[in-house]
Image (tube, rainbow, N blue to C red; front, side, top):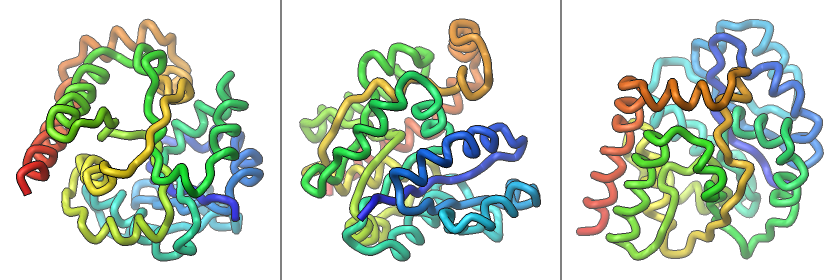
Length: 253
């Protein structure tokens, strides 16, 4: 059985849509289907939604009311896990990360990493390698790296609690999602807390920073811009601090 994808699709200015169109042949060649959760802001884009809904590769899970990002993701993961066979591997990921991996020099390695996975490899976090982290702004890597360090001190493992790509059997995801409560992005760390004693990890270069490619910006210029942005640092802290809180509370249960 081929694996399936599950990703949120929040694209109010249609930035991701041409990339999704470009990578669709690869997605169809290596995955059975994609579960896609689309908020109201994207559902108002009738042309995009008609295109998605006309293709049976996509199973659309529309949000009919505004939700916080963690609630959005939880709705997606819960429904994908319920719809998929329990033994099917689900790739929880992001369309911009998929596009970057498949439209750049990383394509062959990404597809090989997907195709060579076995049931015994799961659950698996594809983690950012040191080379991949070096491409990210320092306020990203230092703050998310702090969560990893806290987790290592508390639980003895170096895990990317703010993961970008997690592969898990639908049946296990179904069981875990009943325990996830955070309404913010910190819910992705909650998922790992329930997996951390048996989750596998694999460092990959194809999780390098995707924004310069997606936004068609010079990498160095955009990196310096983000590193100097207080708003970007505050954005990272808004989910990093709740992640640290979740880890510390989990450690004393």
